[in-house]
Every structure is written in structure tokens, then in C-alpha cells.
Length: 186
Image (tube, rainbow, N blue to C red; front, side, top):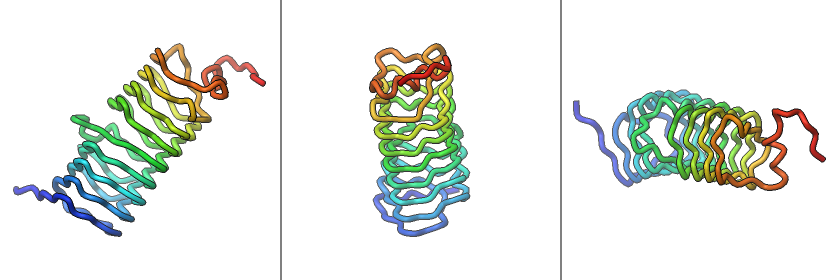
């Protein structure tokens, strides 16, 4: 079976996508909510104002992909192809997503809603969480070395079960590191 290869094309407001390889393509205002995107490869693509909530993404490849202003609710990124997995999120809603055990070194999350996102056993070394709401995000056995949480908020991270050497936090965010002790900070 011949695989479709599409390069440098812009797709606007579509709801169906042909299986294949997409390189340096742009997706604008597309609705892929609940769509089966399994097995598709996206290389150096950009999704802008798209809805991919609850899409099926088994073995989908994301290589240098940017998401801007997208809804990505409930996505299980751990089901993606981990080879060369590289993503960037700006102004996205990622609530209830899971990145379980993924390598996310230097990944940037800017102005994102990360409510109840599972980062368990991820490698988030040098990741940036710029102005992100991390209410009930889960960090267990996660590598956070050099990660930047200085402008993130509503997180709760247990330093005893995560690797956090040289991670950056603001003075206001220190409470998120002490939650497990049930102390009050004023």
C-alpha cells in the first residue's frame, strides 16, 4: 500500500484527514475532535486554533510540531510514536491529557491550561511552563531537572518522589512544593 506524502500545504477548517505523512503543513481551525489520527506522521507542522480533543492518536508521530490556541482535551500522548517526539504548546487547553513516560526534554508550555495532566515518569528536563495553570497535574517519578516553573501556578509537586535538581520556582510558587505537609504559608 502506497502511503500518502503531503508537503507544505495549508488545510483550513477540515474535519477528515487522509492517513499519511505531513511535512511542514499548517492546519487552521480544523476540527479533529474524536477523529482517528492513528499512524499519521506530522513533521514540522503547525496546528492553529484546532480541536483535537479525544482524538485517537495511537502510533501517531509528532516531530517538531507546534500547537497554538488548540483544544487537546483528554489526549493520550503516551500512545504516540516516541521516536523523535517533539512538541510545543502555546495558549492550549490540555486538560486531562496524559504524557505518561514520554521524553519531553526542553518542551515549552506557554499560557496553557494543564488541569489534571499526567506527567508521571516523564523526562521534563529543561522544560518550560510559562504562565501555565497546573491545577491537579500529576508528577510522580518525574525528571524535572532544570525545568522552569517560575511563572506556573496551581501546581503541587512532591520533591521527595521527583528529580528536581536545578529546577526553577518563584517564591510565590514554593507552596506548591510543600502541599504534602499540610502546612499553611502566609
